[in-house]
Structures are given as structure tokens and as C-alpha cells.
Length: 169
Image (cartoon, rainbow, N blue to C red; front, side, top):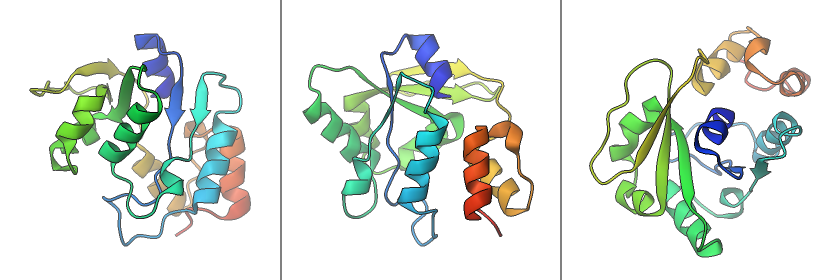
């Protein structure tokens, strides 16, 4: 998704910001922040355009996107920001906390796996279609079921997951 957005919109960089606690997944035990950062670093090691930012991991409580966007805007007041998301999250966006505040800070890059993406009033959106067949949720589900799904993962990330026994049922 990130590379498709980078190429489609001519972005200078793509900033990866792992969340501390997803407001949509409170109560579940995610893989540790250290493991998620390690996998992200492995996956993006050969991508000079990728920046790994632990902004949300340094804050307490759930990670709300509007707070992250407002913090980024304060840190980089002259930058133009985009928020990359899948079509499923674009559809869920009205249920997020303060989506209008997020929309004041960013333009959305919405990646579709084939379906049409509807525009939304007061939100600037750039649709991108991709051929990638799986969502992160599907990949985690497959891994929990014992299917390695190596074709969907960077080889170093797949090895890290195996070595550390992550996502196992």
C-alpha cells in the first residue's frame, strides 16, 4: 500500500507510525511494540523513502489518529500530510473519534482491493487500486492457523515471526 501511494502521488516519504493501543482493538493483546517496531524495521530496511516513527508508542492510552495528525502538523507545520488506509477503514472512518479533526490535517489515500471507493463530503480522498489480495487481519488469521503466508510477507519479517512464535493460535 505504501509503495503504491508513494508512486501514485509522488510522495517524498512514507512515515510508518505503529499504534500503542488501537482504539478498535482495546482488550486484545497485540504483539508487543518492540516486536512490531522490529518487524517494521526489517520490512522497510531497503526502502529509503520509509521513515519509522514511534510517536504513538511514546504516548499513554489509546492511539487516536486525529491526535497523531495534529501532533505531526505541529511538528512539521509546512508539510502536506496524507493518511494511507484501506477501503475497509475508509468505510469505518465516520465511526472513528473526531474524523473531522483528522480530515482538517490530512488528505486520505485510500487503497482498494478492487471495489469502488465512495467520496465523502469534507474529506479529500485519493483512491488507489491494488492487486494485493490480503488484509493485515487476514495475514494474522492465517498465521494463527499455522499457514505461513510467506508470499505476503517480507522474508525477514516471516523469519522473525517464526523465530519469536508470533501470531500463533
